[in-house]
Length: 431
Image 1 (cartoon, rainbow, N blue to C red):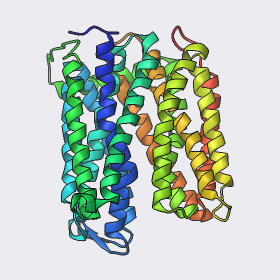
Image 2: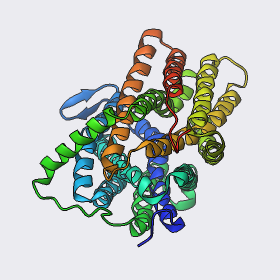
Image 3: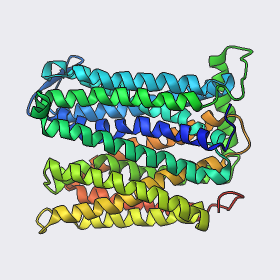
Image 4: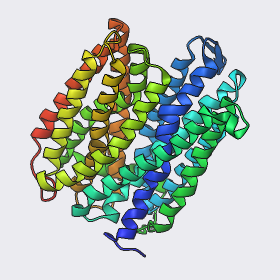
C-alpha cells in the first residue's frame, strides 16, 4: 500500500479532478445549458404535472434542489463513512451515480423527454458534489501538511486540463457534425455520453491507488445512528476551534461570490452584454486555461507568503473582477475584448482560490480520523453559499433590471470574507 506523501498516491488522488471536472465544464457550464435552452426555447414544458412557461427556471430549480439534497445527506453519510471506514465505497457510489446519470442525458432528445434531462441533471449533480466530499476528505490522508497546497493545486490543474481537452473534442463534433455524419443535436447528446465514460473511466485510476478503509473501524451498533452521533461530535469540535470556525465563515462568504460568479458569468455575458455563444465559449476556454496557471502560481506563493496572505490577494483580485464587470456596458466598443480580459483575470484567481481554500481547511483540521465528516461541513458551507448567492443575484436583478448591480454586490461578500480572514490566528502550517 502506498504511504502518505508518496508521489504516486498524491498523483492518483489528484487524478480524480481530471476525471470529474469534465462534468462541471461540459455539463454545468458550456454544452448542456446551451442544448437545454435550444430544445426548450419558446416552448412550454410539463414536468411533474406542472406547466413551466419559463423552462430555464425549471432547470435552475432542479440544480438548487440537487445542492440542497447534497447539503442534507453529505454530513450524515460522511459520519457513517468515518465510523465504518468506508469513504472509498461512498466515493465510488456517487462517482458511478454521477457518471451514469450524465451518460443518460443522451436520451434527452426533444421537448417530450425534458423530464429525462431534469431528472438526470439532478442525479448527476448529486453524484458530482457528493463524491467531492469524500474525495476532498482524502487530502490529509494522501499528503503531509507541507505538501497539501501543491497537492490541492495539482488536482485543480489536472481538472482544468482534462476538461478543456474533452470540451474541445466535443465542440469540434458539435460545430462540424457533418465531419462525423451526424447532426448538431446528436453531437451534443454524444458529448454527454462521452462525459460519463470519461468520468467513470479515469476515476478507476484514482480508486486503484487510494487506500481502502485506512482506519478500518467496525460498527458495534446501528451504523446509521452512529453516523448521526459522529456528526454531532464533530459539530461540537468545530465550535471549539475558533480558527477553524472563523475560516469556515470566511469561506462561506467568499464562496457566495466565487460560485455565483462562476455559475452566472455566461448568463451575464449573454443577457447583460449581448455576446453571442461563440464569444462565451471562447471566454470559458480562456478561464479554464488561465486557471491552470493561477493554481500553480498561487500554490508556490502560498509557500513563500503563507496561505492567509495568498488567499487575501486572491480575494482582492476577485473584488477587482466585480468592479470591472460592473463598469462593462453592451454599448461599449469592443466590449467582447473587455469580457475576454475579465475572463483571463477571473481565471487566474478561480483555480487559485478553490485550491487554496481546500488545502488551508485541511491544514486547520485537528488531529482526527473523521476527515470525511469535517469535509462535509466544508462542502455544506459551499452549497448553502451557492443557494444564497444565486438567490441574492436573482433578487437584485429582478428589482434593478440589471445584472451589474448583482455582480457589484458580490464584492461586499468578498470584503466581509477578507475582514474575517484577516482576524485568523496563525498556526503551525497556516501563516
